[in-house]
Picture 1: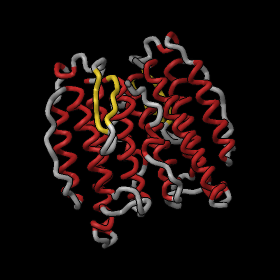
Picture 2: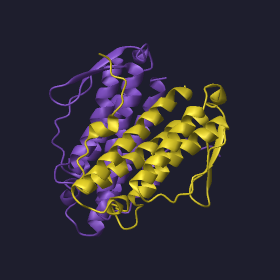
Picture 3: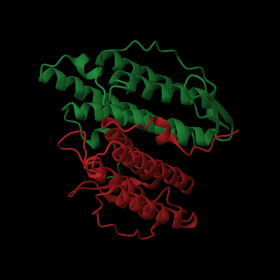
Picture 4: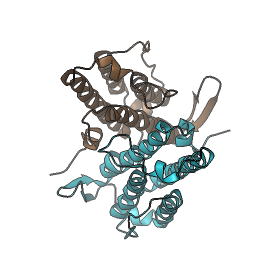
Length: 169
Length: 169
């Protein structure tokens, strides 16, 4: 069941990549410095767009590292440009592709410990970790990235977020 | 597997309710007409907060109606106040509680047809409908509600969104 959700993460990260492409194209068309968009935020004490993308990637990467026991690659959190953010998404998807169903055997019932903020460690059962923590985090930071761009006049729509569903004919 | 996700929806709708409570309390404390917040939006051509909440409820309600074959209650989309939005969330949760595991037997593989916009009908396999459409929609509109309030100075944090996870001691 847990392995079945990997394509959901890859699809959403690809949708995030498409949303960022629209952001970059919009900056170019409107002659706005792209860094204005990647550093935009919805409130002064909220993370800027680049950090939202980093966290969407890390939720996915660290989530499946913890569930599978496979070590995740380290990213330095230095991205500021659209190009660098796209590279981080691509590296995250590459990592998710290395997580096999075998490495996730039994993950549903194992206890996963993970940090929540700098001073707190939480524990959830694998199934709950995936569906009550990792997946809501992915959608939270993807939607917030979308909302930051939408608020800044980028022409994105909900189908950019839902893109890639396995529609039947 | 599909029945297992109903608590995820109920938990997130409860989190949405808590986020709205903070919005209402903030309006009161700052002497702002609460309707200013329920009609706030992040871009002029984006839905206002009240509509975001209505859609979060409908994604959940119609999603499980289609998967289970149980008829969903009709809501009139007339909510404008925090109190009315809270009532809609409560009615949605009440409906989700009537959806039994038996009514979802075989739902994973059945073909679900559903409208996407006024002129388009899409089809997905039940499992994909849940995880590629219904659940991402719930998180999208819950996060957007959160972002609208956050942008308007309401003191909400990500734990308000993730609230209710089945943490282990």
